[in-house]
Every structure is written in structure tokens, then in C-alpha cells.
Length: 112
Length: 116
Image (cartoon, one colour):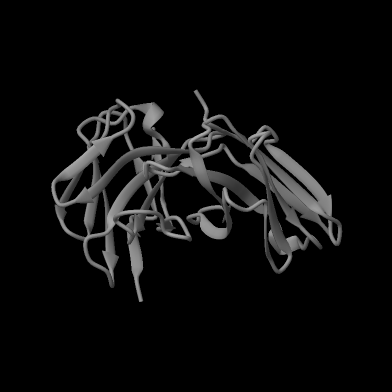
């Protein structure tokens, strides 16, 4: 049973526009969420995170929104750049400190 | 600074052959270590994790095993590879033993394993 779901396998966005990547989770014990970015043949790298006590965290062009009641989070990239083309993984941690649980990823393509 | 090394970068192995992938971490001590696999079209699946030497937790019953013979060394093995073992294998570490690292895990560069 998937506890972290990224229902869109891929997303195409024009350069300069907003990219919105979505993530849903089922485990109400999750209290910390992270987004990772992965280029082909490389390991994922940390992008941005949010604690469950917040509903928004911003870092430059990247903003993560958390809606706890809906068990939903989203990553906004504004403006999108060709270098943002990568696979984005949503990950979640529960309060019991078990290992990170990852979604299946969304492949973002930013078209110039 | 801490670094994580994973090798080899690519590997092509015949079905039934053994496997050994190695991961080492530098610049830290007593890290938590993890092996993940990304199969084609699938997400990051946790295979094993270790909180200390000789301590291995298995998440998914499978054809693979893991060992941690030294504090900063994590090895993924198989006695006989299956076609379904093909994938991208990632090693990761975390320096936080209790609680959470704000940045989650740090991943190695991965090993692309193709079983033929």
C-alpha cells in the first residue's frame, strides 16, 4: 500500500511559467515532508522541506504548500527554467522516526 | 565535509551471477545507512537500513542481502541475480540518530545494474 502518492508521472511546462507538482499521503502520522530532485544517472538531492506545524515554506523559486486536512502537499516552481527538468520525489517521515517513505516521482520537463 | 561514495557506477551481470555493491561514507561517524532501489517506472523503494555495525533491517523480502562490516561501509549483495533485480541502486546516509535531519538523507550517485 502506497503511503506517499505522486499521481502524475510526468508534467510539461513552458519556460517562465509555474510548475505545480502534487503529492498525497495516507499516513496521518507523517509530520515532516521533503522534496528531492533527481537528474538521470545521479542520486536525488534535497530541494525543500516542510514541517507539519507549517502550511508553507519558501526558498527562492521553490515553495512547498501543505494541507494537512487533505493530506496533500504541492511544490511550486516559479518561474520554471529548463534546468528544472528532472524527476521530483516527494518524501515523508512519521513521528516514530522510521525511514523516509518516497513517492514514485514526477518527471518535469520545462520546455524553452 | 561528509561525502558518500558508491561503486561501480554501472554494472551488467548475467542471471545467476553474484552481486556486490559497496558504499562508504567519509567525514562522519556512526551514520544511519540505507539502500534504495529505483526500478524502471517505479519510485524509490527502501531495501535495507542500518543504524550501526552489524545491525541490518530488511524492508522487502527479496533476493538481496546487506551487510555493514565497518562503521561507514554498507554492502549490498546477492548470491544469484534475477532479471527482476535490474534497476538503479542508491546508497544514502543520515547523521541524525534520533529525530530527523532537516535535509533528510544524502544520496550517493547510484549504480545502474542491468541483469541480462
